Image (cartoon, rainbow over all chains, first blue to last red; front, side):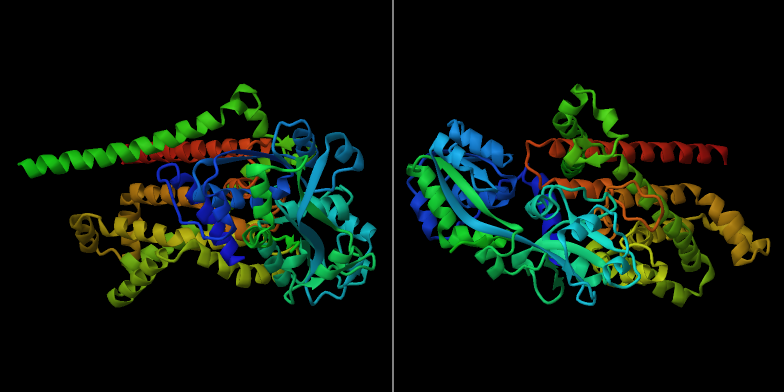
Length: 281
Length: 284
């Protein structure tokens, strides 16, 4: 949390400072060398959860070779699939697997380069370690407000959530809450790390983090009988997870192929892991 | 002579540069916030709640959060600073006063994030257990910690003002047989009105502009706070939270509204307090 917060404040000041100074850095050698003699544009749109990874990857590539321009737009998974299908962009990101219809209609090639699992956490002192989805929805909607109702202590439930730009929030909201309401009284924290610190320090708190972020400082909550672990996410028994896809129309070629290859390279996978996703390799 | 001329241009340049930067930032924000004005929804934003899932992008809860946290932190910090500086410059014996002043000077150098840590790990659990209402991340926690951040500056400014009263005033009070407390109340405080205002202005600006304390301690909930134990979000924290959203989204555009409000608010507050301060000077 400390680092995250410091980082964020640096980013903030950095944005303003960078209007005046151009910061350059030396990119590390590796798969990135593939881009050395390339030239051209890559247009990317779609899933907003992918944006941090795309931005980091694009930054590394563009710093390595200034002749390459990579533009990244959001819009959501649906937009990403539609735009790549209609040839408006080179890569359309989606936080869900495109439907068979879409794959056939547009001739999409799917590249799943990471898995994103999201688990509910509580303080280790909290005796409530298992919840049903209905109970969870009621907690986050602000309808269940005391732990006593769930077999815990006679204390108010402190709900923690993430800011709206969070990919973790999106998955959680869609798959765990079925797009149900999140109370506006919920405390908002800025990162997976901050969420962990908040719940680790609050005996009556409940929140959710990317499965990769879980450790002993907080206790995972078994949801409808499935424990949120990386293994359970991988074998599919824990459902609040999804693949992060980058889709292309037909087999990718040239620069676009190199970009996709970069996502699967050790550097690319490291970027995915750094942003809180489970790398596929 | 030549050197003087050189220095003069140099200082003029520095002054013009820093003054124009302030103006440029305003222009920059107006420019990027322009779509909001054109849409006519700028003022709607100021009065509506924030719920992007339902298409609501208002910043009213953040306005309320900012104002309550700033106001409350001034309520703690102002009397504290006034008392501390009275102690340092008038009441305490020289040695102790010096020690206090050195300590305060040291406090001004502590980075905000340190206060943030202390708040998260000590103050927030304390408030949570003490009041048994909510998570402890609240307006109260943030304002208490924020008052710690703004007090040292305020104390130093007050002390400097108190110590700058003309020696003849002080000597006259002494000659009339005034006790130190009487001297403080009837000579120093009335004379220092301007300095106290200046300290207050700077503190309000600092409190309003502080991001980390509120981000770490206030809880950042988007509901309009109903009590000081409720979680709240400030405009600065809101900007920090939303800036990660993608650049094309409406969320991202609304943070320029938040930035503008902060800018206009601080500026007009400073102007207002300046005017009041100026009137005070004339009346005396």
